[in-house]
Length: 578
Image 1 (cartoon, rainbow, N blue to C red):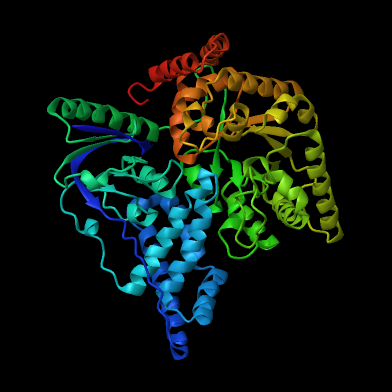
Image 2 (image 1 turned 90 degrees about the vertical axis):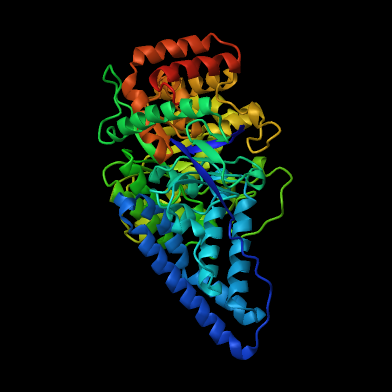
């Protein structure tokens, strides 16, 4: 028996014979063509795009993808395939370099994917998998590859692979594919989201695993704990079968919570909002029981396209999200660009320490053309619903005042054209640096709301690179310094009478919910798939219980003590799930 630990991205237990599949990673050699063949190769590209669009349309309309959940993810792929600028880029490459259609497709898409992979932000770097997925889909049609063996299954299996694309995952027949495990992958990838939506238990980031596995091995996928057990003994099998029954009952209970309010036992309302990257994901927030958008990351408008987005591109993206939530808050964060997170159309000299360099609001303040274009679109969209604007990485009052001054300048420009907008649009900031946290009492006087971005706040406060495997274990919200700084910001926001939310990964972690409520947080913005589970916790506790827990945490002086206390409290609400 061998036990491997990874990241559980979709809850549930699967027990079956394993099936190892390869990644279908096509390596395309460069082949030159004659001038007379260029038109033919360009036509092949057009046909491959047309067939890929039809395939995605058919896939997203399958019955078990009801309510548009997975359709929303594939809408991103569809938008990319329908992007005329992107298609022209491939055709121009064929025309200029005199190469085959498959080589042009592979070269351009891998260039884009490589750009994403080099960005030190999991939400963006994991989008490279979507680009490879699109590449694979186009190459299948260009090269005439046959369908994978997994599509012809007639017995229950768990899939083991180096990595899986969103399309591969969505193509699984749930009758036979009971779960999957991959060597690569991350918590926020679209493959992870699809697996959770489809109800397929999944564990990713297991490291080298597939090379030594016998295809006849029995494998247990524990998506709750992020564990994979290969060739389990009889006692382990018995324990997991009992555990699987408990998990199934728990998932059924979560499904029943969708339309129920997030209210504690003593009738205190908590607002649950969703974090999104694409407007199509707004529907997923709604379907999971979310009450609006608490964090709309807008940099993907720049990173996915081959050209700089126009004001109309911005406006249409924001309008699409507001259409899903016409009466609920939609908080649009201005672009978090700069350093390693730059579109391919913009290049700058590499920085020695990009995390501390020209990024986020600093980048916006030095690139006013880009900044004003986005602000104009946000203001135009503000008349469609409860739109709010939020500035990232504010470190001092001067930066906030500069950003607000530019916003007023844009308002004056719109006045000249008699363009309608909400002149009283709420303006907030992200608290994600120690400097903004320590001066939050000053910043609160000129902000309508705070959103605490715990990911960067922890990284900057503890001086820990969360992406560095050598020190990532030190990255913890349970450190006393983080607890103290959160308590201070929450207090300052309450004293100033402004809104406050938590939008980092802590808001999606069941272990921290009682502590956050006990410290006074009443709005959480989190990953859409986690909304039902967090709602379950909220509906199971009283604020008094949470206050007592927060007071106990304040007396502890080590990360381990705090983590154990929070875990024990959450385990009483979600027994066997943590």
